[in-house]
Image (cartoon, rainbow, N blue to C red; front, side):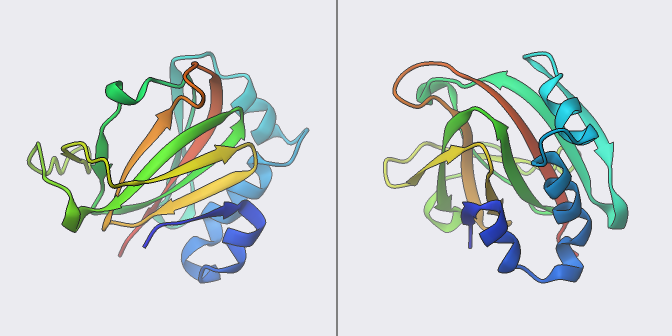
Length: 164
């Protein structure tokens, strides 16, 4: 089941061993002045970079303009748990159990991605700098959405933690 909260609260609720590398990285990403924080804030809009972490985890550091909801889509992953962390800016995310969603694509094992049809029944989250969301394989999620109908620049890290 998806979880979302300020990072410190979210961190306290997860098994330390499984998320150790992810949470150590996120703590640095959210610490103003750290090398990781500065690197994420320096990412040019519309680009991303991959950073390898311990234990098979990795992170996608990215910057983008949030998108209108009709341009978004629900997705899920089988091999990785998403730890999505807002470093700067704010966005909306939506989440729904994949048992309540209709797939629109087959599972793409290379990209660890399946897409789903839209639903009006999802839970909408407002995510601000310092907030984090954990999306497990059963969580269909639609991130990167505009708040208040206007695009905003977001700097974000998405840590991929192996399920197994």
